[in-house]
Image 1 (cartoon, rainbow, N blue to C red):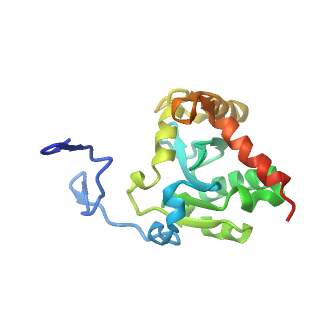
Image 2: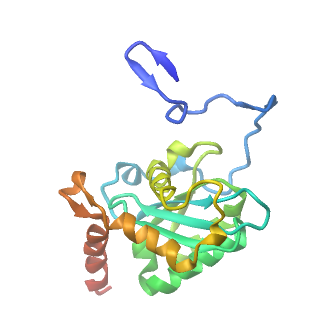
Length: 211
């Protein structure tokens, strides 16, 4: 931790302006996969409008060929989805997105107006999903704080799936159910409503609108 008089910040909260050393070697900045978060409209940052999401992937064990979880959270409501994928790869992420597109159909671009995601290699082809009518933005490399809601909710998911426990121990249905349980917790900040109710209220508006 770093002290600065009255201000106490963790390294997680500090912008990584300088390159950090890992195991004695300089950490080299990655090439961005697409549009940088810096050009994202201000309304997304303010969390006043529905349909803007943050996404990432979660591993159980760091072993080659391990299955993973694609996670995505809506910034206004906090509604969270977790989808088991075969691997932390471009193909795995693509499969998760296909499932979401299949579920929301022709309303997909209204539900997913934008997605801000990690800059990992599994998202190297993620920009192509802009063809679905969704704006795709990428956080800076090694900048987890730029997707704070996703990061916080992923930590809650760890209560169900501890680190070093393989995702292969869980079924697709269990992974989906863990997100359902997170969404069903009443939250004080939203008048003890659930994230699920808030999300469903916004979906009702979208699905009742005739374009």
